[in-house]
Image (cartoon, rainbow, N blue to C red; front, side):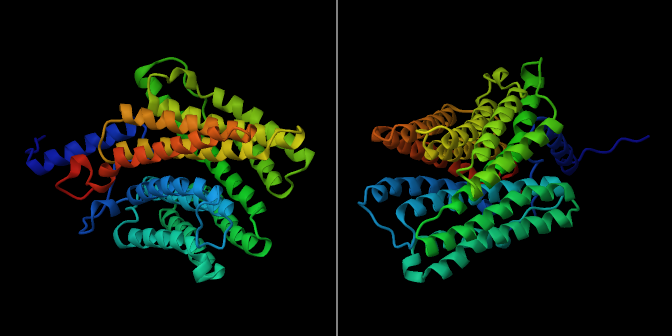
Length: 426
């Protein structure tokens, strides 16, 4: 036998392998980043970087504009009514940005391929940005051109993601694209409804329902996974139940209920399906041992975020069956609770891990989590008590605080090279 001489290059390779094993053991969404050398800035090296940053800026800006629009003190140059612009830019503006950032960062780990980066990533970013401008200025450009530009983004994302998954022969993860494709269809329907009916209706519920299903699928994987990894390392004992038939049945029941809610929103059967889905999701969440994760805010926020899924299902079902329960309560439990809380939770965790930082929630990060959770609670309360506008105002302020806080805390990380790879490709 003979010993290899440990040259600097060999030591660097050994260190990289060690980092890779550490990365997997910490339970990240992805393995250690792999990119090709590039002359492009670091922000275009991985999908999460530009889309998390721009999505957060857009979420904060859209909310700052919303209250003046709501009270008639500001007007857009959009063909959408103010309420439709508000819904659209959060459901089909902010959300697709975050979903795209997640997918383009997760897929390389699923497939073993290099990520979409540089010019391809830049093209997607520019298409998203132009889509936001097209919607805001649609009264000048015309609704059809605005719709074509805006809807082409999600179509391009589905095509890029499908291409990478198929090229990597990772067939089982193609199912993740179904809710994204449904979100694209809902966006098309949104433009058509808003133009021909004057206001969106079915498309709102379809888009939101598709998003909730996506959270049940992806969140149902990462929440117990990250929880299990943390508990095994820090708090041995009960761990989350493994994904199985109960989870599949819960997702299926909830998806059927949300589909019924989309097309038959006043049906008693729809209400029963939604409440049934809520009950099963409560049991599903309880199976993940979230009460044991209080020691790690990065894990705990995932459980709190997912809790808004059954709350939204319950409120949406009760709004059908019980007079006096407003439909808006369930909608905002989904939108501000499940969607905003879960996306911020995932963005903070991914931003820390993929830029080489320790997976630990700083005081600022904890502030972001508290702000968005309280914003969600107050927004549901505002829907239940429309005579108390202070609830709406405080909720909006906390929403802006959370997303501006994310930009301030994580913007520098997203625009600079990965910490332990400053002198080489990420």
